[in-house]
Image 1 (cartoon, one colour):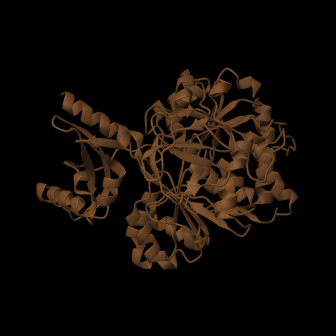
Image 2 (image 1 turned 180 degrees about the horizontal axis):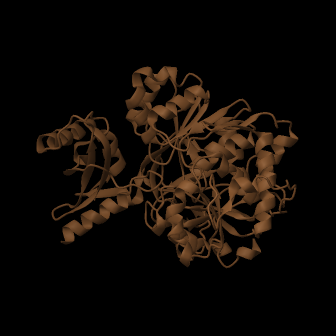
Image 3 (image 1 turned 180 degrees about the vertical axis):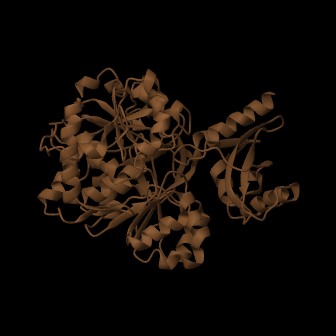
Length: 538
């Protein structure tokens, strides 16, 4: 950890860290060894680890490839503490590369495949990346950045390209049993936020943090078994996907299904063909699957026992429709890149629509006012959380002081805690609209609009208004067969008035072909707010 003293936030700005219940991590621990070698030592070598349309790999297969790639990576000069960019889809190569790098003590900087050169340049320069591992089909955008970057070597998968190392050739290297003796509090990954609220920020997570999310959320909420099959679509570069499609199955000797690309039908087909038992998906994906195959859903999900949702708030209408079609509740939860994974969640047998749930064992949460005073049940306020993981920004001391206050992490969400201790999401702090003296939560209005058959997607933000100061404005993507006109806009306003408190209805509606989104699929409401401010200013 000392080697990173110049980029770690000052220790006094770190959050308070709580122990993992029933677990004590040693002073030295390597996350790759814990996730892979332990399965070999426990006799799981012949069990399937990774499944994909391109073939299956057992734990022994993965172990062999990782040991060989480790040899080659060390030979090219990758050392403990080096930052290495991963530009790979959800594929066996991603997991093999991740395990090999972490085994060497390098720091993984994973990026989602949709990023363009401008976004890659920001991350590469900020992290001071020295090496990159990239799939051949994703090389074009990376090459635009290379001439003026700190990257000295590029390893390309699935092709032999002049001036680059070949990933597959390196898998023929002699196997090495070497792994770095990493302190448990040394950096394993540098995960960048999606940029939904501005420029992406690097978040630091140690080897013990990787294990902590498995030993809290997965252990207590999912209770995985070795015969479980994890599946879904979140990118492994997104911490929601990293946990759900890699860390959790490997920690408990289960298997994971990786899809490089997917449509709703392809995702459901994978659930059926690979007998997926635990699904990780964003709320939009559950809705898309319902729209695609609602009447035939049961033939695809007969092996599912748990469905997890995070990334954005889960609309109550989607929860109810999924429950009606499949008989399975969706376990909504909230996490953040800063916290690494989910820290408040519903439970199997205790999942409620429009409710985020209770803190995951090991975590504490409360709702406070602007002066950080805890609020009583029923009053909305800022969410504060602490636990075994927490925020440490890479080289951003000012943002660190904003996110962590008084030892608590503040993700920027407005919540209400009820009398039973359940947390209910209201909105992002920036999404709270004060309209004529009333507080209106944008996501609540969105949830009402999504119940109308005309609405496919929606984002509600504050729009400047001379009379009221601010009013709710809805940007709406329509389903096919509906006409974007004033009569429909009025119908939607009236629909909201009849669904929730009338004062919350959107005073303005704009029909749009698409909504701006981040590479991880989150709606960029900050972009819509900016547009509204500029429109008024002009």
